[in-house]
Amino acid sequence: MIRRSFSQLPRKRIVPTETKISLIDKLSKTGLQAIEATSFVSPKWVPQMADHEQVMQRINKVPGISYPVLTPNLKGFQAAVFYDAMPLCVFLSAFCSWNVELKKWPFLELPQSPLVGSTQAMLEGVLETVPMNHVAIHCHDTYGQALANILTAMQLGVWTVDASVSGLGGCPYARGASGNVATEDVVYMLHGMGIETGIDLDKLVEAGHFICQALDRKTSSKVAQARTDGQEAKS
Image (cartoon, rainbow, N blue to C red):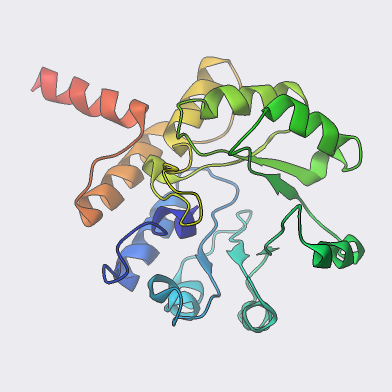
C-alpha cells in the first residue's frame, strides 16, 4: 500500500514523485498481485498525494497486476476514472447512514480494519452477510498482533490481505496506531507455512530497503531487520 506508506510523514515532507514511481515499479517486479498506488484526494488536505495524476500516468503497469487507488469523494472518483485507475477504493464507516446507499454498489471486496476488538468475532459477523471472496483483512501492528489476526482471518477463509512495504504508514485518525503490517513479514509467514504466494521475498526486501533509505528511516519489518543484521554480521 503505497498510499499508506506515506500517510504519516510530516506535512512538509513531500516524497518526490520519481521516488514513488520507482518504488511502485520495484514492487511490480516482486510478484505482488495488487499495489495500491496513490490517493485521488485534495492536495489542500493531503499535499503528499498531489501528484496522483503523474504517478498513475508514469508507473509501468504490469499486466496481471492491479493498481487500486483511494477516492474519498465524487471529484476524486471521477478523476480516477478519467485516468483509468482501477480498482477504486472508497471510504466506509459502520456508523454512517449514507453507507446504506453503498449496498447498491457492486463491491469487489470489503476491507475490515480490526484496530480494536476481536478479529474472529468481527469477521464471523461480517461473513454472515458478505460473501467471503468480497472480504479483505487490514491490520495495523500497534500491539504486535497483526500476523495473528491475519492468520485468524485466513482460517476463516479470508485470503486478501492489506500490507505495507517495510510496515510504513499509520493512521492519522487513530492516535498511537503504528503502521500497517509489513508486507515482508506476511510473505515470510506464508512461505514458512508452505503457502505459495508467487512473491519474491528477496526483491520485496530490496524494495523496502530502497524506500527506507529514501525516507531516511528504519524498516519496521522484522524479516528485513533480521536479514540486514545477518548480512552485517557476515561482513
